[in-house]
Length: 465
Ligand SMILES: Cc1ncc(COP(=O)(O)O)c(C=O)c1O
Image 1 (cartoon, rainbow, N blue to C red):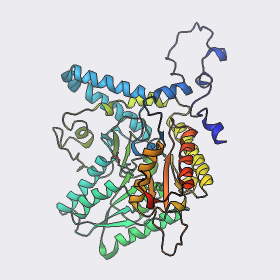
Image 2: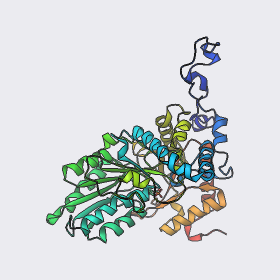
Image 3: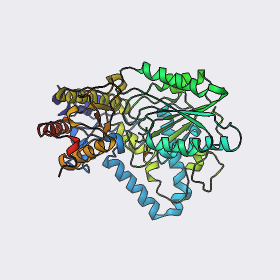
Image 4: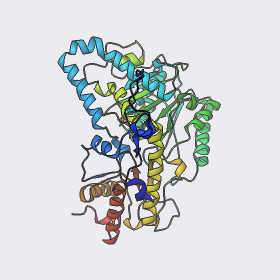
């Protein structure tokens, strides 16, 4: 079944004209005498278009790790290059007349996609790491300026992204905050365990009269990857009186449902270069208008300091802003897929689950979570006989797969729990599916692992020469 689905790459409408209407085939296009009010939408992609859009990808490599760095099609790269040339041709004109309107255009598109109330709620920044710094910096000022008491708490998931954890350390712990990590089970079998642990952590945060000033919640955790029930957790935060809720959705847009009104967080960031086809690097940071967030500033202070975060972020000194400006072109690209971004997201999810199930069947292992908790990424158990027993082993195996087998895939080490006997799966691969992937990419990965098993490979023998 997998091969029939993927060999033709059903991301692509097999008969583009049928869905877009107005072709010779349906009889509508017999030279109409009526004047055209609107230009026809561009036709849906056919398989060869997709191949051409990603022809800069190394054909020798099975790229099943879209989650780390995303991808950017060649039509968008060309548009970016045009913008760079416009800037270099006449910087004065670009700076004074073009840059800001173009950034507002990108922000407006994002505002509509994420269902925000107002374009002022949407700032464009470089990446999720920068967005986290913006949110956390004002927490540090809250402590420094006596708005918060020493020991007031911030809560985050144990599986928060490493760089974000470091930011919490730098901005919250160092400022006098008390940080509580929510332990999460992995493998995970349902959202119930997550909700229970989260509620308990908030209660711990409120012990001894402390206030919980901030909750940092991932929408899609990075490693191991699991979709977190953000809406439910935000509601719990409101019930428990948490001051501010920041959703780190570095993988959000194009990967999971991103609706600001439904989620209800104060702050929400998503990269646009991961699952939204922008070139590196660009992200949005949504800041709810009703939240008291007048003290939000870009960590890089420039001329626009004090004019509001969105304006500050649109000029942080001389640099290449072209990745911020290609959002309209990206939308054009996305709309050439059936169902636009929703269609892409849905199919990516279905395919990655199918590929994950194919792999665990081949290796006699299991998925890291049920399909409904996967996005366009899924954790796939690796054979226990590899003896993965540290983060270092996981990294070495990743390197080996890349260098020896041409497979790009991140590996996660999951320490055995107390009482777990030998034969337990301690290594999981995080596979992604994006529009350029083919079933052969996953077969290549399957066969590489099978070959290692046949060769009696164990991590103790790494690195393989
Ligand atoms: C959950 C999470 N947060 C933050 C980041 C950081 O994203 P960036 O490196 O684009 O800033 C990532 C990157 O993968 C992530 O997965």
